[in-house]
Length: 332
Image (cartoon, rainbow, N blue to C red; front, side):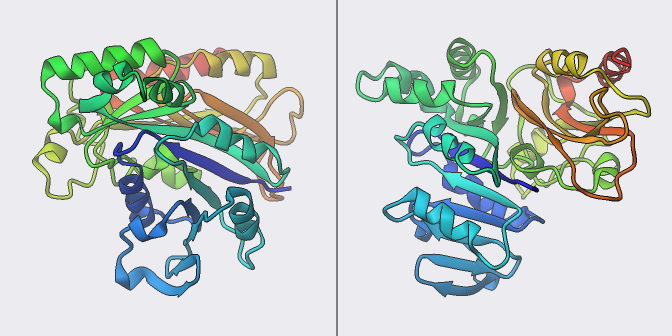
């Protein structure tokens, strides 16, 4: 059974969740189903709207937006009953919800799998929010549920403010991967499935993003590309992501692979591909990793070659591709 990945996007009120959804809808090449509290807030380009029927907006690029209404479960069932099944489901949690609770829905149906919990933060407000006696616990809970944290609105931070916000994240979510962003603009590959064409991903750098790591200087590698969208900040923070391919012809011990994945440095934000393990040396499995979460599932395609091919997306300024490749080669 091919399972549909589910990504939950959370974060406190005003963090930029809807802005991120707009960005994903404009730049995706996948058939997304986006479940939101009110799709009226999604700024869908008019030329993309194919039809608008009740609580559903159908887009010309194959994506759909569905209002959650009174029941997230009913909305999720409705999406899965669509004649053309989505390739990926994105659920926007409300600004005061616990994304981890919503993510549990992906475990209730065998046809679904949890891709990641992505939490946005309003970086300028973050230190004050976690100290607030009314909402501090909510914000902490959201951060602690995250596999990947997008530290948004960093263009509004001074150096001291950035340090304070970073210290909050290191204290509350030490295991989460963290990237910075302006206008919630990050490469879609970091939030969603990186795509089935691994060869294309290996030769083409991540697209449509301006994010950067919370630590380290800018990367000046000309081989890494981002859309700049006309913003000065985008130009200053371009070229911050790198890709790396891990290949092997021999099976990898499953236990050693698990240790390798659990020990990946935090600059590795995304890893996807096919990997041969000693459990089934003639049939590769599909590996997905977003932030700190990874899964290894059977691949049911018939035309898959018996070899390992993984593609990593990482923060360029912190990334040692050669060291990562050596570490993976040592598993065989």
